[in-house]
Amino acid sequence: MRIVFMGTPDFAATILEALLTFEGGEVVGVYTQPDRPAGRGKKVRFSAVKNLAMARRLPVYQPVNFKKPIAITELSTLRPDVCVVAAYGLILPQAVLDVPRYGCLNAHASLLPKYRGAAPIQRAIIDGEPVTGMTIMQMNAGMDTGDILLQRALGIGIDDTAATIHDELAKMGGQLMLETLSKLESGGLTAIPQEESKATYAAKLTKADGEIDWRQPALDVHNRIRGVHPWPGAFFMWGGLDPENPLRLTVQPGKVGPLNEDHVEPGTIVGMVDGHLAVACADRLYLTPNLCPEGRCLMDARAFCNGYLNRCPAPNP
Image 1 (tube, rainbow, N blue to C red):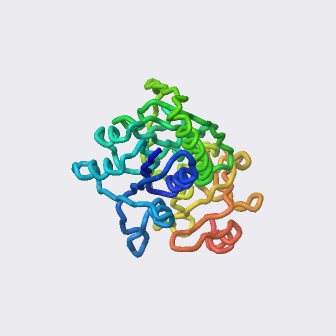
Image 2 (image 1 turned 60 degrees about the horizontal axis):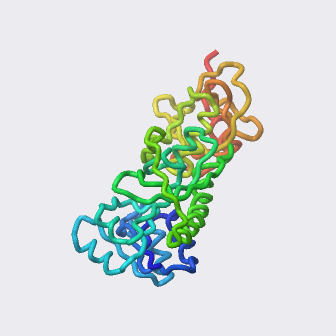
Image 3 (image 1 turned 135 degrees about the vertical axis):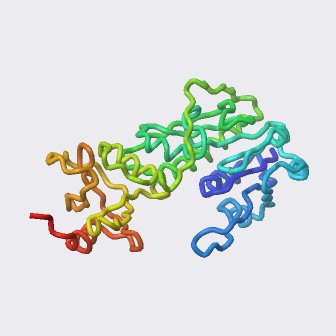
């Protein structure tokens, strides 16, 4: 089986790595997004998929899009039996979907039809979902609307973050794609249409999604902090030192603490509890082990207390 792979970030590279172990096929080409400047130095960086493809001496293709006929012709010359797509980041028109005789298969990090879109892992955690999973889907021209070929569930633990679930689903996605390809030629797959009435959409994250609303219950705050870790990161503006110029504090995932029995105003830093920094929420305290003041390095709760809380102005008598 001749396979063309299309993907860009680490998540996709993990699936490509699994694909390269598939005994029944050969990866004849790898598509990834064009090189772009990244980081503070704005140096041009290769995608994780491109780095892996180059290390394995695989042909790499980086079209800006598939609007020009030459891009379709280039893909056709590879004579793919199937295209495997994972977090590619480009929309595939019908002309691309029609090239491989088995079409294009997408590895999506959710239990479709829930959480279609760009940020299924993060949104599922923010929403407090107990379960997520991987779906291998037969792509069509819609946004994650194709028929389901295989699915597998994964529980979300109370301490899981977007980072941990990302890594687990990437490994699961690779294995599920191998299973799908094995059954593809034998006809052992049953395509199941998605139930549109159950579809939800997982919008792409922005930096604003990281802002913590301490007026929410502590469990909802915990879900938010876990869902945006490591990017964009959870933060809030703290005016303890200078109310006129509040300091941005980035918060690391922690745990739900005891009841806010004194009804302290949400967002108030209460102090140290169980070696964590305690912040008041609507119902309970939230306990974070580490946090990062803007412009400074990550520090543990005690270092923050010593360096910042002890400098707070004394309360009015």
